[in-house]
Length: 131
Image (cartoon, rainbow, N blue to C red; front, side, top):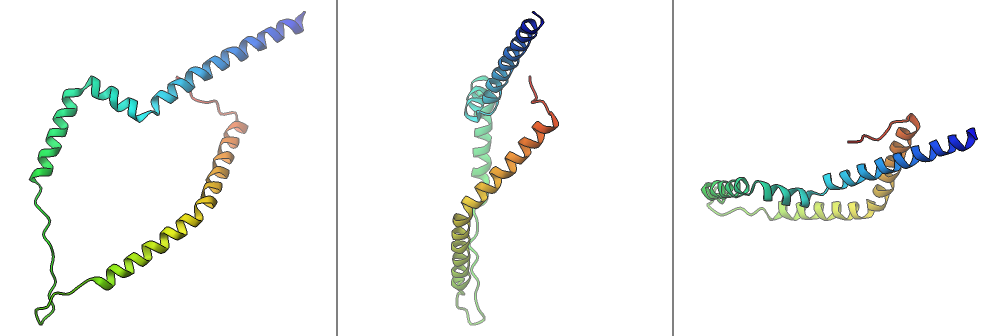
């Protein structure tokens, strides 16, 4: 009899914990949805959003135009920055190739780090934060 009562208590506690996790997961999903948050904010504070957009547009319109900088050598000829641009292009191309080739390794490393972090928190008995 005592075992049956203990089993019923454990089942009830497990159901309660599962329902709390479901509620917290739903709330977290809502909190992490940026599009829904922006839409809701726009619905609630539409005038503020429109005023801010108008002010931002006004500030952008009043900014001075960028001046083109032309460098001239002592003889009066324009200097070109072609060698610098070519070097920068080569460097960026090499960096892109290196990054593309290292993506699988980086993803694996981040996954291992995250798994270790989560495992460490579970071992310490850190409870997830609830609302």
